[in-house]
Image (cartoon, rainbow, N blue to C red; front, side, top):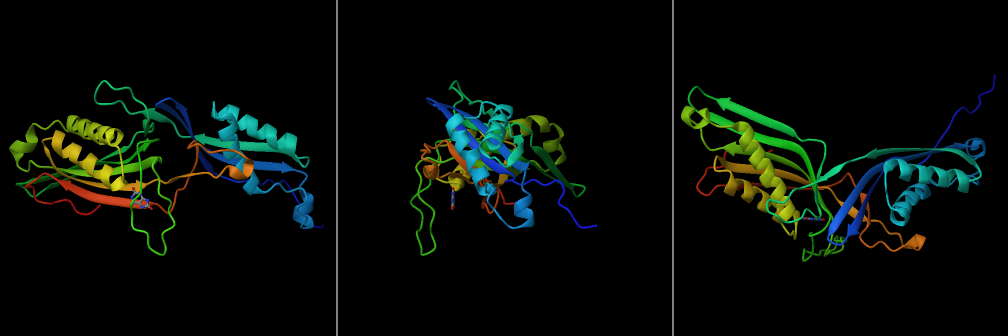
Length: 297
Ligand SMILES: O=c1[nH]c(=O)c2[nH]c(=O)[nH]c2[nH]1
């Protein structure tokens, strides 16, 4: 029996689109991972190599970004329906469109004072809390921390004035998204039995976490390095039990999508989220006079 073509589909998987809607100074964010799969009468392209009925996967990705600009994202369901309808009704060969969407939910970071929460967010799934305890029969070393605390500022971040060598292509920016996944380890200063006996570890954790979030939200940033230092300093200043903190912050780059080819203006609204490579910014912040004791993460 000769071979024959069975079920087939194609499209662009995992377009990461972030749509910011600006309501004055108060911003709203939608963050989706969109996968498009189209099917229909695509026998010719598989059997003969003719691409006459092939809408490129590149165009399906562009449609996701252009629709985010033109129509906004009210809900993943509504956005997916709009896309699916578009592909099926605009392409004669396409009879079925399957749009899979993961939505990453963001919550506002509450300010430490009475100001309104405007443009700083924390990813809704909780981080992982970590602890490392070392004891030699006399002295304790307690290192606590967290990984995977994902945060984003949709404005109040600039990056310019850096070295421009032969290989520098990055454009300077006065308004960008600053996003990172906070990985932190902090060392408690008390090392004897008396010092650790009364410690409320949950309370210290909650305070350190709050300090990290609030410093991230409240720092007008000229680099992730500067934001990192502000976050570490806030922890050392406000948590008297903590002598040292090491932060490892991947820069989760959000690039503006060029919508000009579709006759659309991108007014800092539609971003492409790159997952790799990423900048990795790391530093330790120490209480003055304390000895460095944290190994590099
Ligand atoms: O905050 C930043 N720091 C950098 O060192 C850097 N390098 C880069 O390409 N983008 C950024 N952003």
